Length: 414
Image 1 (cartoon, rainbow, N blue to C red):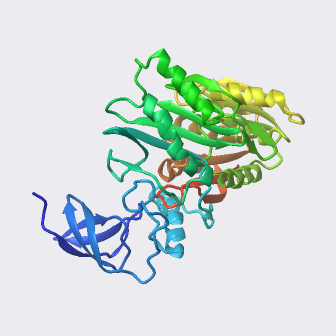
Image 2 (image 1 turned 60 degrees about the vertical axis):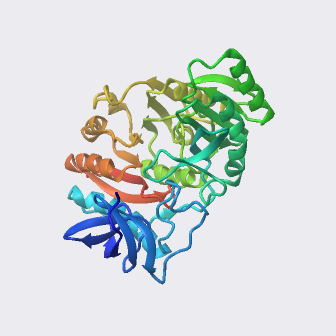
Image 3 (image 1 turned 90 degrees about the horizontal axis):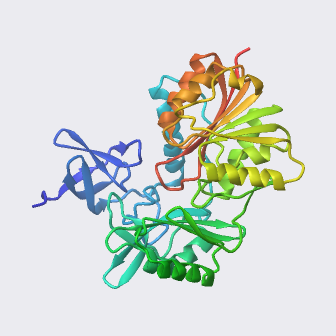
């Protein structure tokens, strides 16, 4: 039996954008609420579910799509613009402060709506239908998406067509994961979670359906099933070709902003090592003026980078190395031959690699991160080893979510 509804007064915003209220001497986190609002809610543990807003803030922003509050993708659409930008910047400044780092943080570079070119959808069989969309907030329930303020128009229009693939490949009970990327040459689709017992006839049906939908490429559980034309993206003056379901920046606009910041950070360096290089988002554009050594554990991403480097004209030499930088970071003696480094690890950060980088003779470093907590931890290592940060810039490519991308420029103290 659920607890009876209570009335809560929102006092402030928490670090993730939830409203914070006090109830019976303890904090309660309230999603989609603004400071000063009075709401009626049901409390479950330390969280509340809003039943209705009794007294709304006058500056509450309207929802940008019909699924807001139900879909788990966006959590901050209700924030007014100034409060939204402040919260996003505070994600970085608060994490730095926790590590005792005093540094100036730029204003947030906000990316426009309807620009997200890559999304991970879920598909689930419900009765005789297949629903394709996003998971609800803190839920395994899948919300069928009709409209979205974040996705590109092309990706949004693709969703109903993805149900044709899901109807063939989705397992009877669990969800099918669909990673969809809009590229210059068409949509790249990677399906994971399909039954391993999927028949040859079903695989053939998938390929036929993908061809009829005009997809550029289709992969299934990591295996390439169909490639009508190689997916391709443009970064700066370079072409890149991501691997099936491979990582890339969420929007073209954020990628361009981050590349400009990285180029500024490495300056006129002529020998650059790109750590966690992926398919070459930074390596290939930087190769216009510097020799590049790209290090990455993903073999498919490295192969794509190597191919595009060989196909390009006017680039300096680009070498590649397959290496797990978590288990075997490049040590300071290996880093001696480089003037600058770019490091863009996953959310877990790169503590071991950062320690080697901090002790190396490299002169300039561009640090990129999608996690303010691990970024601050790794930055502290650099600062403790005689480095100084010259710029920290948040890039809001994860629009209306409690996530932020960060690009920092560092150089050795003279």
